[in-house]
Image (spheres, rainbow, N blue to C red):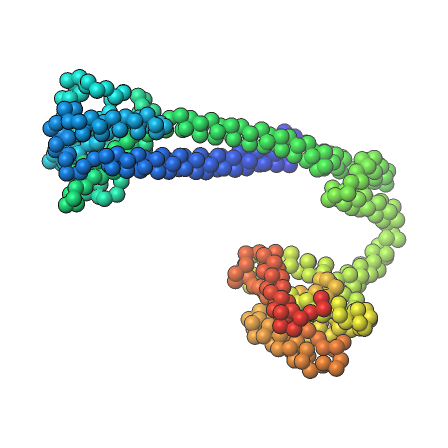
Length: 469
């Protein structure tokens, strides 16, 4: 096997596919988890900020904002508010800043007036700089600068997250304050530092990603080991052996068979089945080629026999309809653009017939249900795919009339169920399910949908009549 062929081999491409798929899943999972965790973190801080600003507003008299600006630290009331704010700040984790500003627009530019702005710690004797700071003009920056219209015109709080090199991750929250006349007078604001919790989130995400990557690596290694042991190594041995076969002489054919037998790959999976099939083919080839003249006549006879046996192998002996193998074969031949339908039928109350009248009567009951199915879907192949389970592949005329035919067979079973009360063996009844290519993307999905619909029909029968089964 050359290097290009080895690169395209299952042993290389499948592990790569598994690894890439797992990495994509990890990336999606970690991203979604990170977004969810960050969203919950912001929501938690938003609720805390809402509670803190409510407590801040409770200490203020909305009609005294100008008084607070004018008197500020010289007012006992202002000092009492400041003292309570510092206490609130000290007892609330992660509070970075607390302040009360009056926001407004100066022309089209956002601006603010400082009413209360907490420093590092409370003092009964503020310096002149702190006193002069109250009433001063504040240059509104982000994240509030772009929210100025909401700050002064909306009754709802405004909050935004921001990051800076100096302060790290912050949640800035501003709740409007209105006077008795309902006029905006200021905003109670609080900035929460989310830096520590954000760092914890990042560490959690990194740890989670590492665990998933480690688990994925273990799974990948185990998958590769199992794949090589069970699939690629046996396939490579078969491929290398078969590629060296020669068929020029009878000795060549005997040597081919000996090489293939020497592999001794009798595993109980598809590789073992393939290997056994190859052995059988080589044995047959060796036998027929060594008796070539005699085989010419035998082949003609055998072809006819095989054709007959093939037909028999695809028929159900009891009902003379197609068997499960025939059904599987025809399903496989369905193309993606084909119009088709699948009808599934399952006999009702068969266990009661078998238990009370014997299995011979049960077989007659199955054949009776099958006869009704065949008579209604007379232009479509019918298959017995289980003990009392049948399938019909609808195409052409029966497909075009599928809904009418399903209604017809259900009516037939209702009729036989009601008309033979004194003869339970011939009181035929079956549950029907149908699905078609108009709503299903593949034969497998069509069969599954028809099966689900059939069992819904059986459930309705049991609820209506009761069932021994």
